[in-house]
Length: 463
Image (cartoon, rainbow, N blue to C red; front, side):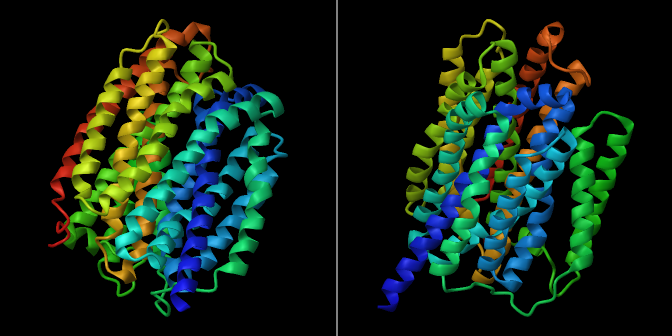
């Protein structure tokens, strides 16, 4: 009987985590299609327009580590449900924003709510599923992420064309609270393996300020102020690491990276993977609408190819990683990504839409092969008491990688077209910036293949 109750609880946990894993990427991806419309309504230039996406990523990335630790101390379910409420309320307010600044501010709040869910989702799944079923559950959750990414271009494009860009926030605003009520009624357990430990407020503050300085500065390169901010961010993170190594209860156990090779290199591979992939949708969305003249709905129908393939492959590769070495699967995925990115370098105004579709399919195959096995390798490489930390680290690598990806794309666009709006007079420069961005991503992908292979096999976590 008890075993049946545990099975029911684990099933409910998986469904709820999958639900939030669908909503968050849906909003993050669909907003890219709405950027030209938002920029037109609020008079935003190309750089400010990118911050509608980056504000969400930045706040998610900087709060993930502290929130992951708080979840370990006070309960993962509690933090997870609070995140759902914060995201729902911020989304409701975003429907009525009067200007670009307010929208960006609410995107920051949405990011904090999402960080609460990112930091706890995988940890909750790992807590309730045994090791022999964990890869399958993680694979299903990754599939939910990719289904959200798949729905975003189609459903998001249709909603934008029919109801305007504000309609994108209807879904999290209307469905977030019912999900919380369902969770309270059905999930009786709570998981807080670090209960009673002290929370490192100073370290958390240094981490948040340093990450903000680094990410904001990086996105504004190559200006002098940006160089200074980037340097300050890096120095702050070095100080953070030094402090964490001395504490009995650090907010982030950096020693794991030093003694656990599998954990360290799997996280590096994840960081590089997201740094090479996230901005592809951003760049291609602008390319398809500004250069090829497609509507948001038409661009969305094409961009859906990539996450659709990802959704199909991720579940299969997750199950496969329960039986075979995740390193080989993930490394092969990174190699496929590098090939797909290389095929995007020569795009021009004359490039056929069919060609873009085929390349997006190749990229989707690579992403699907990489994500589930790599996440399974990370979560399986740590002791139970570090599951919350590992979950937060996975999510941090994803969001920092996505932020770096957007930072690279924005920096290259800034170099080629400055702070002006994208228009007919600078289309040639924009296309060139896209090609340079994809070339940088290819180089990073090759580095990612090395990181994925260098970690060793399933016993790679031995010091």
